Image (cartoon, rainbow, N blue to C red):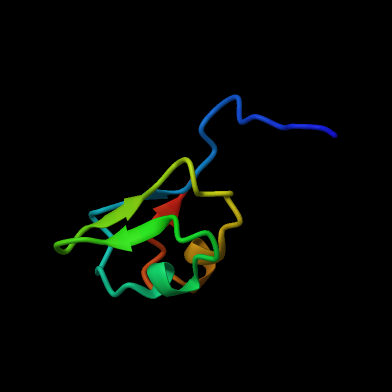
Length: 65
């Protein structure tokens, strides 16, 4: 059995200047890595697998690596 460990943080980041806090990214995240808390988006780096689904559905292109 092989175990893989992340060496660096390749997770998605929120550009808060672009974000409209609509929550589209929250609903599409399969790993439940994204939360909308008090009008801000929080991404849990431990849960994020960098699949980029959040960036694909974001209408304002506010998510980036």
